[in-house]
Structures are given as structure tokens and as C-alpha cells.
Length: 336
Image (cartoon, rainbow, N blue to C red; front, side):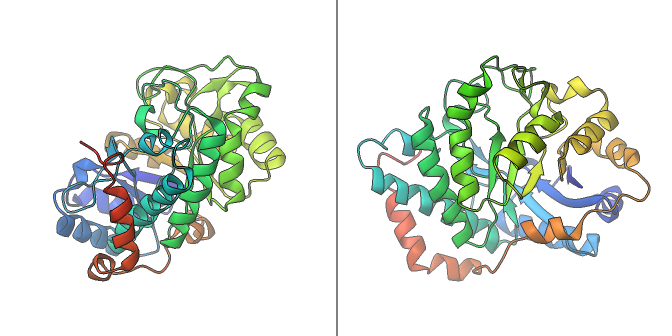
């Protein structure tokens, strides 16, 4: 039910108790948890050993501006670089995006991370938080990339998480710091922003992450607090039967529901299967607010758990890695 953040590069004693809490289904790692590849491998082993049961180990390793682990890992270009070349060399950049997905997910699986929350399939329309993380402002273009990116992640043994439903790209505000309201009519959102989500769902994406954005033409509540978005639209209208994951409840836009306990309950009541509590400072209150008999659903964990993986050395020698590196070394895709 909860995926939680931890503070540093080793587990503190009190974090042992957090990971053993029956409502905790996993941990999310950030740059603050990374010093080297060897260190983060040890941290992951420690998290699993301390929990004493299956848990998810997750991260945001998108590439470009959001890549939590850098030294010792491939430098992944931002998704916008693929979209800019879509109209010129469509098949080559679609293949490059698929290889980007495969290599990113393969590197994470090689160190025993189950899930990198990807891909971002918001439209690139000027949002301060999304920016270069989006493939394009064109829904048809983003839909094509969504399908191929999901396929690449699946090839690496990783589930895909489409974010941020139903689309975070058409508001200016960064929901980490501000509340955001998208005033467009539902018909426009459905024709534009939902097109990539339909493509990703058709490709078999296992999870969707909800945006902390309100769309008052549908519901005055932000999408993660909205049964209309999660049940009526995502599940009933779009046929999605995977897992609904909240965005981080520590973000400013999540505060509309009230305190930590209220935010958790609002997400769960709306239909979220997993709630992200990324800030360690919020974890004790989050755990205290859970019902005494709340237990993480093993079926949810199993559905998102990583599958077969290459070891790090085997990955370095893989012919597919060589192809991925060739495509990602293209001058038009390299990061400065």
C-alpha cells in the first residue's frame, strides 16, 4: 500500500522498523541514497534482508534531468531529444527510444531494482516540472513512443508505469511547489492527453501514476483523489486493469486534501493501489495513520516485481547493449 523514502546511503535503525511495517510494499531511492554502484547494490540487499519478505525497490531513472544514479551508469538522453527528430527519421528514433528503455531498465534490473517509474508520456507543452522529460507536444508522436518504450522495458524484465495520468503537460505549474488546475474541457483532454495513455495501456503497461493536477471539467479534486478519473475513466472507460499509483504525497499540490493521514486516505478512497511517501520526514506519520490491520497486497507486489535479469558483466557484453549504445551515441541524442 505504501512505497516509502529513506534518508541516506545506509539504513538507519528506525528505518528497519519502517520496512518491516506490514503496510509497506516497497522503497523508492533518490540521489541522496546513492554514492556508487557498489554502495547502492549493498543498500538494496540490506532493504530486502531487513524487510524479510518480498518488497519493491523503485527509482526514477528516466534519463535527462531525472536520473538518480549517474556515476557508473549510462548517461541517458532526455526523451525530448527523440521527439524532436520524430518527423525526420521516425523509425530510427523509435528504435532508439526502445533501446533507451531496454538499457535503462536492464541496468536497473542488473542491480536488482524492480521498477523505474517510466515512461513520462505527458505532452511537452511548457510545464515547469516536465520540460525535457516529455517526448513531444504532439499526442500522436507521444503515443508512438509510449508503445515502443513499454516494449523496451518489458524486454528487460521490468514493468512499465505510465505517468502522469491524465496528463501533466498542459499546465504551467510544477506540482512539487504549486497547486495546478487544468481548465480544458474533457473532450480536448481525451482527444490529446489520453491518446498516449491508451497506446501505453494497449502495449501492456502494468501501472499508471496519477497527477496532482485538478481538471474541474471532470472533477474539482486532483486526479489522484478522484474516483471519477480512476474508476470511471481510467478503469471503466479506458479498460485499464493494472495498478494505480499516487504521485508523492509530500508535493505541495497534494496538500489540498489536508495532512499526511488525510492525503493517504484520500488516495486510497479514490482507488489508488499504492501511495508514494518519498520524504522520510513524513513516513512516521504515514505509518501511524494506517489501519492496524493494513497489509501490503502480495499480488500487487508480484505484479510489479522485476523479472529475469542479466548480471552487470553479462549486460556489458550483450550485443543489444552495443546496439543501444550505438543509437544513443548519435550526436543528436547525446547529452552535453
